[in-house]
Amino acid sequence: METAISGNRQQISLPEDHAQEARLKEARELADLGKLNESWEITKAYLRDVNPNHVGALLLASKIFWTSREYAEAYVFAKRSVDLGPEYSGTWLNLGCVSEALYRFDEAEHAYRKALRKAESPNKRLLVLNNFAAMYIQKGDWIAGEELARQALQIDPEHKKARANLGT
Image (tube, rainbow, N blue to C red; front, side, top):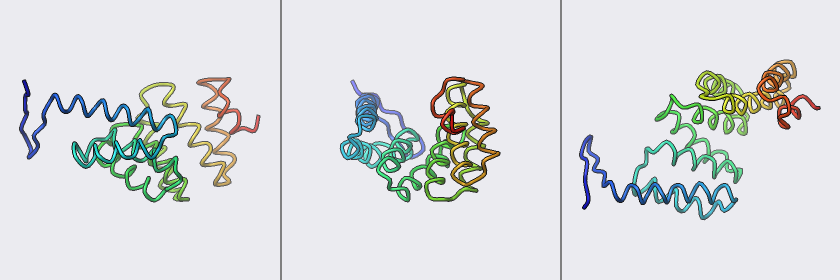
């Protein structure tokens, strides 16, 4: 039996949604395996046919294009995910990474600061600190980069990327 929920000009079919969520999970797994074209086809269909405002799907689209080094496309999806999910650190982290890749350092810094404030766990904070430190190092602000890398090492003293940011 199919149950429909109506509201705000949307109608959601629950059984179909569960099947679609499984497809989105499959797309995430494919992206993690480096099968970006296959992942994009599923993600694109999800955004087109199921929900163009699904923050997780938008983040995945951003990841797919960022990994493919198609930064302008990744930026569009990252920016939209922040617009729809500003409460999530992951949306801000993705926007920071993509902005950095486009040499939009002021925007990247703003996004990383937001991601740090919203980080839900020490591991998420560590991820943000590492990316933020790497951005400062790329920008040539060694002092700020070192400070953030040392903060990351306070969370995990053996973390390879945090150590790499310090050159150790």
